[in-house]
Length: 108
View 1 (cartoon, one colour):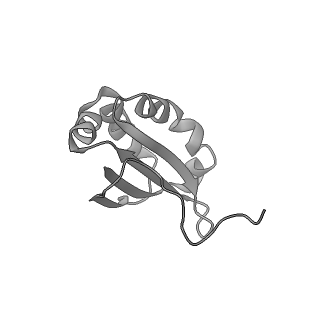
View 2: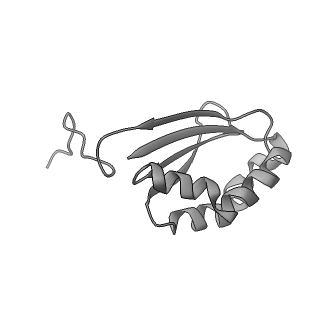
């Protein structure tokens, strides 16, 4: 599985509406064959920073994502909305998605 984490620092005037702005891109990516997950979160330390966690079944699925029209469209408009170059971690990991954490379970 290809696992990717990206930190997007958004210009202050656009940060409140970021999730709505990326909604179409998010929906299209989640619908891709080979997408495992594509999830946005807002930083608890920086109100203008969003973290995207995404995974694809394999390198082929990841390559198709980068070649998709919705990816190219997002890359065309995003430079006007971000305040700095996103930071990224992109690694291949074993597995097919989220696993249960072995060290912690709810008391029952």
